[in-house]
Amino acid sequence: MNRFPLTKFQKITETLTWLLAGVCFLWTLLRWRTLPEIMAIHFNALGAADDWGERWTALLLPALLVVCC
Image 1 (cartoon, rainbow, N blue to C red):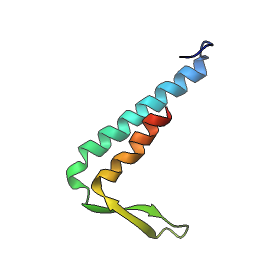
Image 2: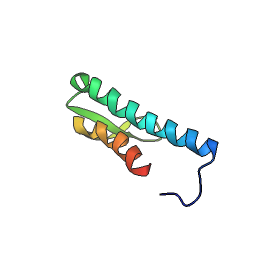
Image 3: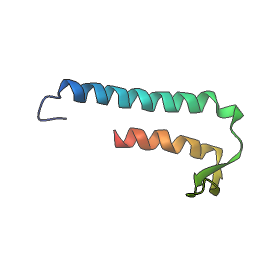
C-alpha cells in the first residue's frame, strides 16, 4: 500500500507492467505445446547457448516479473 498517491506516470507504468506480465504468461501458455522439452535458457556474450532447462523454465521470466511488481 502506498503512503503517497501515485502520479499519472506511475499509474501508467504500473498498468503497463501488469499488462506485460499477463501477456508473457498468456503467450507462454498458448505456445506451451510447441515449446521443446529441453530448451536453451541462457546465452553467453557471443550468443551461444550455455545453459539448458526443461520447458517449465519458460514460466520463470513471467513469474519473476510478477514478483518484481
